[in-house]
Image (spheres, one colour):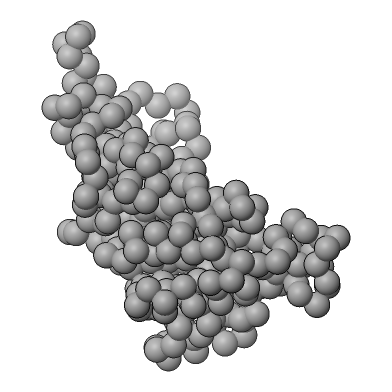
Length: 281
């Protein structure tokens, strides 16, 4: 594909009509909970193309409101978690125009996917929130999309700075659709742009393509994410523990992992669960 003439930081050289400089990021379309007046219609009608801004939320659905963090409820808990309430995670699909360089980027990515015969539905949703763009990618297309973002001359996202996980499971055990997410932060040093790739996974199938062959920096990041969340990165050259001992059972940053009750072997003691600890209020 052709290389852009200007980058997102070239405010002096790019005309205002090009959308560079005058509006460097998403502007009015940035919202975690809504994306235009037709949000509900957009979520339900199906079909379309996420990069064109007309695809619904697909399988990235709203989670339940979270309260009693980490299972601490109706106790003398003094940490603050017991009374904390957070709204459900609800990434809304963005609509065109995305604003700033986001539209140019989406067009370039769509064309690059077409050139490589990668279906556009590999990107199932585009979300713009707080002037940042997130692409929700189908798990078995992640490697292909990442390689396209790296190699296309109009994209050039050469660097993966972080791979991390998040567990949106409900504290009370109620089912949540695709609660475990993997997040990739990509940087284009050529065009000085940042985007985020995100993949939603079911607890019964925590598998996603490794991107180590595309971004070697993801090697230890993916190992840490597997170590903490149990996400299996298919194709990783050495997916072993990196923080916990090799024989450790469980994944400490999963919501189902117990806070207490873990034997302290060198003292022969056991830390009690939060609801069995002594209260001070």
